[in-house]
Structures are given as structure tokens and as C-alpha cells.
Image 1 (tube, rainbow, N blue to C red):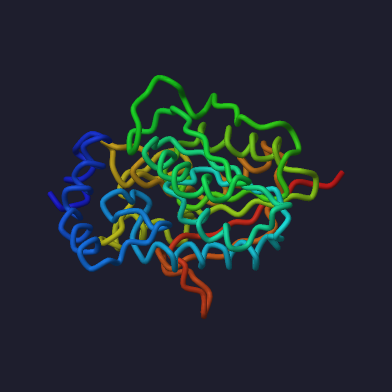
Image 2 (image 1 turned 90 degrees about the vertical axis):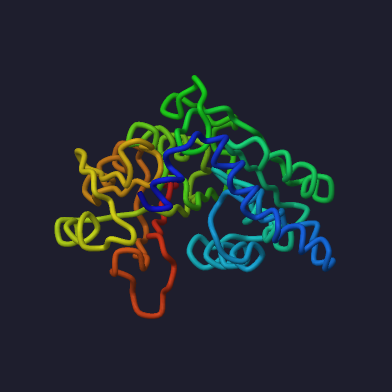
Length: 280
């Protein structure tokens, strides 16, 4: 059993605890050296991926500016905001006329954001939503039935980093429908996925052993059968039908490096998709 499989074999709460224990010496050493930044969580509290917290947030902001033309006075929705990686970067970009809303299923991430960000930036609001996801949270409420707690046509921009990569098809379809509902006409959404097609399905299911989606389903593939939200890859034609069902228009597609399809000079790991809500 490799480390990834071992990690998936324990409960969601245990995964958070294991990470906290693993990084406890590094977090303690940062405090001793006086390296604590108010807007950077402890390493043991971060559950949203690897890399430098501040630099990753700045990179996400750059993607939003480049691909969906994010403006300082936009109304912004961060779906699956985690522990505020993008939000921290956005505090230095959004104006007082702009606003940020974020929600996530992991309560400790929302608590940190409210305490560290909202207290200094009142136009940044965070909500905890109790939804079932066997990677992060075990509850009764299903993401496939969840209605975003926002009015129709509320946001200029919506974004999701590493969210659809952990969601089942019915959940993704519901979120796409909800994104369409809350976007203003002409509004755009940036999201990341793991995408595959007939040409590279064998590579991502068998050849690429370091990051392998071994378990095939109708229109998508799983990395783990035991934790079905661990990592999910969608067949492009399957996702295209879900987009059609939601009435969102695919505006741009930028392949990431994970499956060897990325364009020269582009180095994001996951695939990036840009959706738009028609102005009509």
C-alpha cells in the first residue's frame, strides 16, 4: 500500500489530524524563528494541496485576471474556498467596491478565514456548508441537491480550484447549474478538472503510475474505489454534455501537465476550463 492509498484508507477527520501531526515540528519551528504571517495558516491546517501558500494564491489571481478578466470592483464567488489561499491574494486586488463570497465543506478552513481575513476585510465573507464528501466531510446533505446560498445573477465572476476534481457527476451537474444561476449575464467562471479522451485514456489509467485513474466508470474514472471523491477524471465528451445541460458555454480550455497535454510554456498541473453565461 502506497502513502496515497494509506491516506485514503482513514476517515476524513483523521486525515486532517494526521496532517496536523505530521507538520507540527515545522509549524513549531516557524513560530520559534518568528516566521508566522497572519495571512498564512499553519502547514498542519492547510488541506488544499502543496506549494507555497502565498505564491500559489498569487498565481491563482493571475489566472483569474488573464482568463476571466477579473476586475477590482467585481463581485466574486469562490466555490470550495478551502482555507483562503485565493482569498488572501484577492484582498490585495479587490477594491472596496468589489466583494468576495466563499464557501467550503471544511469548517476549520472557514473559521480561519473569518478570523484572519474578514476581520480586516469586511467585504470578504465566508460560509461553512455541511455537505457530504468522502474525502473531507461525512454528513447527510448531498452536494447534488445543494442550492448555493446566493440570489440569481449575483456574481461577475465565479471560480473553483481543485473542486470538480473531487466531485461525482451528479454533484458536478448541480454545481454547473447553480453557477449558471448565480452568474450575471456575461459573467464567467474559471474551474479546474482532470480531463481525458479516447487518445490518452490508457495513459491516465495504466501508464502514468504516479498519478493513475485505474477505475473506469461511464464517462469518468476514479483514482480510488474506497474514496470516490479522492480524485476524479472526466471524459471530455461526458463533461461537454453536462455543460450543455447547464446552459453554460465553454469559452476556453487550457490543458495542464498532469496527463502530458499541456501547451508549451503553460505549467499548471490541472486542466483549466473557462465557462460563460450568455448575455441574452
